[in-house]
Length: 237
Image 1 (cartoon, one colour):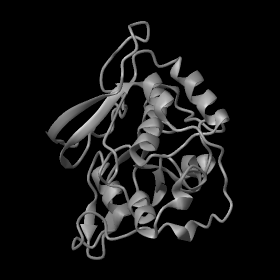
Image 2 (cartoon, helix red, strand yellow; image 1 turned 180 degrees about the vertical axis):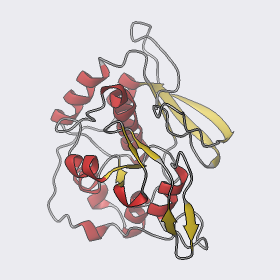
Image 3 (cartoon, rainbow, N blue to C red; image 1 turned 90 degrees about the vertical axis):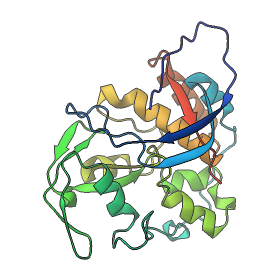
Image 4 (tube, rainbow, N blue to C red; image 1 turned 60 degrees about the vertical axis):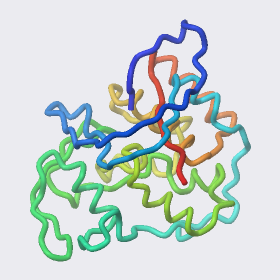
């Protein structure tokens, strides 16, 4: 998400390391543009800088999908609250509800209301939602996750420690996106584009994932339309 405003014309800002101690509170805006803030408490060092600096910091490497199978990433696991009966997917849906649904035994959800920023659409049934990984599993495999342990891939697939990794959106928009990167797909909701690009860069930096030349060029081009955008992320353990 865009955290503050900087101007690209200022002297280059090196990515700085800033201590952060924050208890974040869900914040669903009525207009649906800013959907939620982080829903966790962190006490950690956070790295930040301009969006262009962030793109420059993503390692450059060719991508390969050789050997990829979706089952290489265990999901969905028990989530952040192991005994609440809701898995990671359901916890994301509950966290992002603008109007909270009723939760029956077995984490059955009824009612509720959500905003899907990918396509600027309101959703009134949890069954109409997919939980998307901003950087898809296949894309993460292509750009570094193929070398990870199974435990780290599970952590990636169920990353609830930052609001940019997992996002509830309409099933239609998620399936249109599929495993595409920003060189191949962008949110049709133009007002969400800068948030999407920033979240993509933050996720790649958080997990140490690479970008190929085509992806990097696309990110730089998209960033031109996001003057002053910044990235802020905590490196995944």
